[in-house]
Every structure is written in C-alpha cells, then in structure tokens.
Image (cartoon, rainbow, N blue to C red; front, side, top):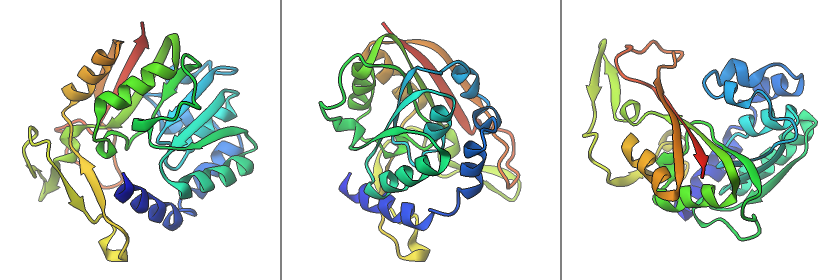
Length: 243
C-alpha cells in the first residue's frame, strides 16, 4: 500500500487538469451519471438525502456527481494528493463532501458502523486490493441494515487480454492470481505500482462471505476510444444488499 500510495500521489499531480471537462459537466448539473455511468446510473436516480460512501474515489467524479444530486457523501482514498484534488474539485462543483485519507482495507474506526445507505465505486478498484475479504467486510460494516453495495469495475478478462492485429490475445492465465510490480508510468519516471489480479468469482465470493446478498451481476462491454473486438466483456457490475 505504501508503494501504491506513492504511485497514486504522482498520478494525481500529473492528471489534475485532465478531468476539467468532466468536472465542468458536474458543476453545471448535467446528467453526468446517466451519461458516463450508464450501468451504475439507474441505481443512483433517487439519492437526494441518502448517505453515500465512496471507497478509493480516485478522480472523484462519481463521488462529486452523487453529491451534486443531493446525497450526503463521504469519500475515502489512500492518496494524499487525490484527497487534496478532490477538496478543490468539490469547491469548484459547489458541493460539500467529507474526505478521509485512509486505506479501505484498514478503515479507521472514525468511520462508524451502520451509518451509510450506499457504498458506491467506479472502475479501477480491485486491481489495487490485496485483501478482498477485508475490503468487503469494511463495506458491510459501514452500511446500515438493508444498505446497498454497488460495485463497477474493469472485468478481469479485459485486464489479461489485448487486441493484436484484429485478434484478442490472452497475456496470462485467468487463474494466475499472483501480483508483481509494474511501472505504469515508466515513460515519465514515476513511481511503480503493485497490482493484484482477481477472478470475478473471487470478488463475488468475498461479498457473500462478508454477509452480502447478491442481487444482480452484469458483465458488459464499453466501447473505448480505440476500437476493440467485442469478444470479451470490458466491465462488470455487482449489486448487493446487507442482510
């Protein structure tokens, strides 16, 4: 986590201006969630007054869009720079959010039990997690009874495949769950990151083990800017309820 914190602090500094147009859309109250999160958006239609917590909020766009719709939002992120950027972005968008700098796998007791109506994520979560059970147990802990965990992320199959000359090539076994250091920003001499590979069943079973009821699982395809053969799902969504 210390390695990944340095990595994400560097990315936050590098990418501060890249989301300007997205932030402008949220500030101007355009239907951001409906446009950019078409699978997640339908679950977030009526959230005014709801207490929502966003783990690993990253660029903060989903978090800020929920706050703009009137939700009472808390965001948690490991990166000091992401928290700093999110604070400025919230002011720009005209919303109030509570920001906590913490590792969701070791969530501080200052975030109370049974408080939130929804735990909501956007893509780019589980590849940074080395303890799925701890992650899910903390999501379960902070939710009130009948609260919902809404997870969207990149599909594990899309992570281990790539397009080469019009064909899908598998880079490594789907069942290889090892982790290694990858310098994702080597061209800019930024700090490396440690990534973790999980099967979709691992994530679902961790949610079940934590006590969640699985309400719905979707595997779907998002058209990227560079055309990708539509043979494997790019993303997934899991909707659960705390029982």
